[in-house]
Image (cartoon, rainbow, N blue to C red):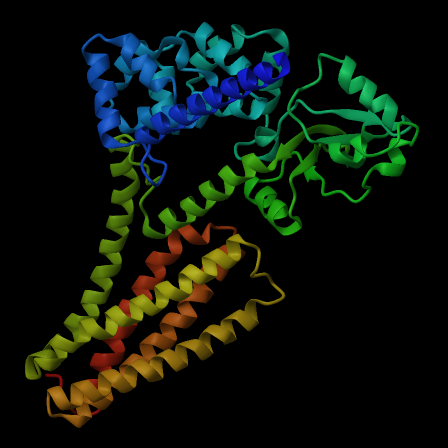
Amino acid sequence: MDNREDSRSTDDIAITDERDREAVVRETETELDEDDRLRPEFVRDVIELAEAGEGEAARERIGRLHPADIADLFELARSDERPMLAAVLGNMLSADVLAEMNDYVREELIDLLAPEQVAELASELDTDDAVAIIEDMEADEQQAVLDAMEPEDRAAIEDALSFPEESAGRLMQRDLVAVPEHVTVGDVIDRLREDTALTSDFWEIFVVDPMHRPVGSCQLSWILRTPRDIAISDVMKREQTLIPIDMDQEEVALRFQKYALISAAVVDRAGRLVGMITVDDIVHIIQEEAGEDILRLSGAGDGDINEPIRETYSARVRWLVANLGTALLASSIVGFFGAAIEQMVALAVLMPIVAGVGGNAGTQTLAVTVRALAMNQLTDSNSWRAIWREMKIALLNGATIALLAGTATAFWFANPQLGAVIAAAMVVNIFVAGVAGVAIPLLLDRLDQDPAVASSIFVTMTTDSMGFLAFLGLAVASGLTTMA
């Protein structure tokens, strides 16, 4: 009888706990929409509570959020609302929240904190996340934060800052587990249990030789499933992908993608193990690098909606000035054929079509080429093959568009000769666009210039100029018009 009562009591507790969990989930779901973004009404409610001085109510609502969602809350708030929001949150503005935050928003908030507060927050993070917070600070502020840190944490941060930006040395974590190759699986398990100084977050153990050079790695699952008396050297995987400490982060991301890595050892110039990089950091890098290439193609700078207006203006206006120069070049070609255009107004109507379609064809090829270069798919061994491929595609596209445009023009203006001229111009310009779209970024890459930065301007200049020249030149050469 007592056992049945205990059983019912346990079941009641379990049901109650389950209902509580469901209630928490429902409350959280009301704060996020179907795309896991904070609802606008929730953001407004929190800010209104903070403005009304109801800090406890605001903290209660925010307290159910994940650190990444709290970071989103700051990014969605206006710049002048963020200091008030930070004051209301107090200790809830944790290191994990700062690590998830947009760079520009994080810089705003760090400016509000004393160096001792920034040092305390940075000390709670992995080295790579702490470096991301500190590296963009002004030199004097950076030094003040480092001075306020514990010697061990400070040494790790200073070591990371000594490496170039966007390198493996900045990206890696210093906290890892490494064991000598002569120990047994039982020795490793005992150390993991007894050594409280070891990092708590890891899933791979690195095996090193007496010179602290990595000779293999072993997943935790292998260790747990292996008898204690087996040597770790008999369990470990000897094939490794080692990351040089000065390797660019984009190259690191490509290695992770190519070899399907979860983590990888980072070695110094002497081959000694100095850190590790994990896939969660690589996801951010891939997103960041892809976004950078897209924005560079358009000349939009960092393209961040939180970027200060002055910096955005500076980044964009220089590309607009450069585009103005290339547009003047194309206009000068049109001006050269001014007399011909006066004789046949149809030329003025049709020539933007030739240039516009050519520009789009060039942009298509350019986007594919820049991506292939970024992914290391386009190298010296296959560059000529890629050029020939784009030439064939350009001829096929050109022939198709030429047939459509030529036929439509011939019927529209009742002038088959004009249709033939625009058709020929389309073939020429789309072919040139295809070649330029692959050749220009390849040339810039060979010159050690970023093809994503300047390629679009040169390709646009080529397609606009060639489109006007081909169409107007063929119109004059065919006898449709004469030039005074």
